[in-house]
Length: 451
Image 1 (cartoon, one colour):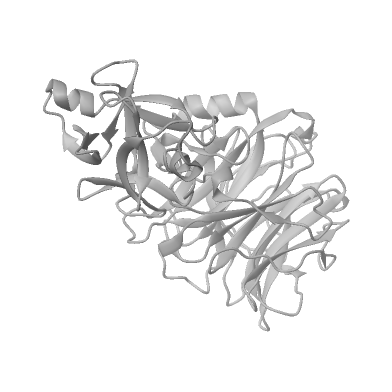
Image 2: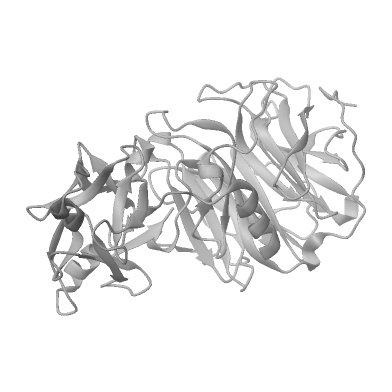
């Protein structure tokens, strides 16, 4: 029997799964990395979404749980709803960007509803001279147990191993779960009815794939798809089924922290080879989120999470026609730049009642409080509020339906009412615009208020 680093009380889950609940939202768990490491956080973070695509980070994007043993940091968290309706959180025992290739332990927490975490422990999965990366788990009825799968090297190549458990305390002996004959990384299993879908990264070519099994047992998966990739490099696939339709999403994030962005595909036939890449306009991941996990939750659970951890006290503005870019200040000039960016807070804004008219809106910087976006010679700058009538007027805008998409937003100048905020060569300015303006100009003036 494998050794448990710390003993906690646990019980076998015997109650029916919570699948009978009406899921109306989603929860995401993740850790964080940013290009210059100033935004790194090797702890558990949470976000929620009503549609599974646009995410609101909780607790101001700060951690909700931090490991205190082992390397005192985590990567690759995974949230599983157990058969009794409560949750367990698993994570890789790693901190930072220097990888321990021989760590045999993972972090584990129990949680009733993700508003708190208890029974923290490190669990040993094996005694091999290899790692235990990206642990995930799912229930297999034929075994009456949970499969805990993870990336490891079996002495021949990088494969997925599995341990069987009923309590996430005592682990069975490890065995090979998936070995397609080439190196693999980051396995994620979605259980949908009687099918088990495994997404994984093929380390030989760097692409993501989806495989299927009707049993969920070791060595029973058959690959369904050709390789999928967006960006220069991709990893950490997540398979998600929509709560409201037959749509499936496949998420992945870029390999490099210098380009820590999420990509997504959509399919109405997960059994086929028909995945369509989503435009980044369709989704927004939390700032600096890496190697995430996504689980369905009820509306009541979503409300409880927001109540417990709090909604952000800031927003971001996403460009409509350059959806990888967000409004930020740089040397006090306003512009749109690609995400990710450092400092993180350059792209975060407090939307406050308009300084000249409370029916409008003004944009206060989060990391330079007291400075607001204002136009000067039609160019937008981040300037300190001198409380003059001119400044208040220059820093006030009226939110309207997006000129290119009514579901988004445009911002009309208070004191130049024929002019709207738009980007031009990535710099922000106010220009005359209206319904008769060219489509490209209207797109330049359309933004999404997001997080």
